[in-house]
Amino acid sequence: MSREEGSVTAELAVALPAVVLVLLLVLGLGAASAAQMRVADAARAGARVAALGDDDGAVRSVARRLAGNGAHVSVERDAPWVTVSVEAPAVLGLDVSASATAWAEP
Image (tube, rainbow, N blue to C red; front, side, top):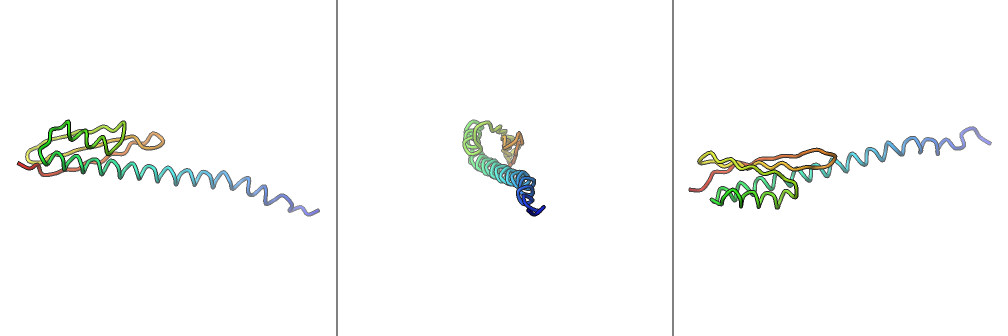
């Protein structure tokens, strides 16, 4: 019987948790970047709606629909500009945010 028997099993037992941890980190990063893209799209869509002259309620509705539940939307009007900011929860308690500014149509 060799002294090396079982060493592969021991090495796998040590390496497997590290592989699982790296996989979870990659998946979490992917979910956070998807949430970031969602809020950026929501801010841009809200700014477009605001630029066309809709009221703040319609702007918030459009942005929340795209950003998802739990998103916080703020609208700032500083003639002739309008800025829409969106903040939403992502994974592991992280928050993602984005803002977009547009020229408001007269």
